Image (cartoon, rainbow, N blue to C red; front, side, top):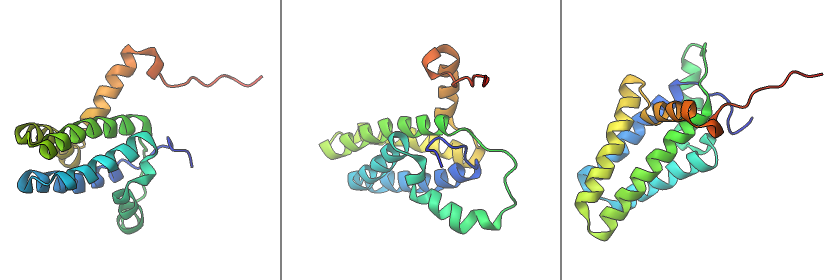
Length: 150
């Protein structure tokens, strides 16, 4: 399966709940190490493949079999872009906490938490929406057009 294969939209929402819990724990504890681990997870999903997300594995093997089959799938590219946005905020937060700039860590982590909670609770993926907006404005992000076979 391709790293950009369409995904069950319930999987990213499940992952967003766990990510929200991790980010809230970081805000409560100030643990830059926990935020660094989340940063690595964001990076793996954004720059390599969504399939590397351990919460996606939990969803696929423990939750998805108990649900009705999905009728529609989502494109992976917007989700990967959103993971990249999460990576940037988590990286800034990690740098803030680790360097003693706690306010920077709190602000960056809070922004990531708000985005994760919006995705988890409402299905509103802010990074995905930004990707789609950019796709309309930037031709290099356009979906590849299939050419008719001759």
